[in-house]
Length: 360
Ligand SMILES: Nc1ncnc2c1ncn2[C@@H]1O[C@H](COP(=O)(O)OP(=O)(O)OP(=O)(O)O)[C@@H](O)[C@H]1O
Image 1: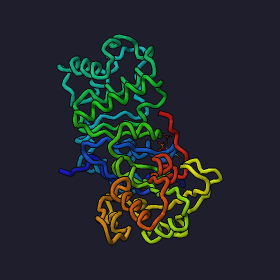
Image 2: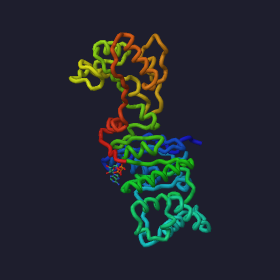
Image 3: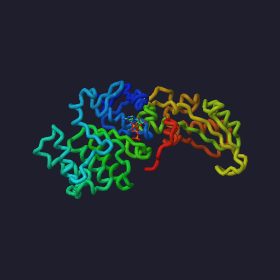
Image 4: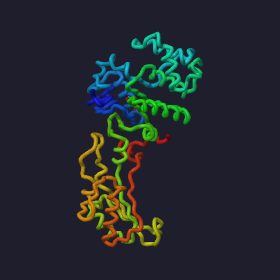
């Protein structure tokens, strides 16, 4: 059995001249909550529609739950719950009656247990109290929850949710997110698209970033945190000496280092201090989209010969201490020291060339 719930190879969709999805290689591990992140129009919905067999691919292949799509559609779809662009509920039927209708359309669903399935699904999304209310009178959040209940009528191995919090107020958003967490806690793989960075950060274990039809990065959220650039910052009255040390450590190349002399040094006491910054090597090339790379650990890359060799690539760990130790050993008066990491938001903007809506 494949350890991937979703796998695509070169998956492509063209609409006449426009390439909506451009040869993407998705790898969604089973058991993950995979955030499919990208600005509006970047190809997320089209990808999801191809995965669910709602639209054919122009090129490439897709496997869902280890089965080739769309060939295995009939076998796979009963194990997949989907929320795509809001299901069409009949406004004059109650929530329960709407679900019963969808359940009746599923040939794998036994009619004798329908009422129980509908009641359980409504209970799961917290809509039992509104079961008899007309769906047309539901709030947007309730409609979205009814859509999730629909996806949950049968036990599912995979949930595919297209922008499940779109248009919801903060309360509805929180509720839907907490539902998604509860699905994941049950072991269901969740593939959720979003244009909200904060949402993906809060919910997901993995993330794939779409930009203009291309999958520009994918990996664990942790890898994303690590994939941004890290910079060393040293506040010192001895900037030239500091630069020399950083340079010897392989950190301060011409392009990656800078010295900023503070008119009134606020970072630490005393005028005449300068802020010396340099890029840390290694992190930038860390392993997206193909998993962890074998780039050298930060310690050896620093070229430190004496002292304990730092092997942890985390620049907040021994490597930071090693840098400070080297500075101090050379008599640099270190008045401030920090390692700053590019924020995820900056990283995504770099990857996509577009701003993200970062409102939670
Ligand atoms: N049926 C279609 N015919 C022509 N073009 C389409 C069709 N469906 C999608 N597109 C185009 O393909 C591109 C990708 O659209 P898609 O809906 O997949 O993006 P998205 O990332 O889901 O965006 P959003 O978050 O706005 O839904 C867009 O430029 C869109 O206009």
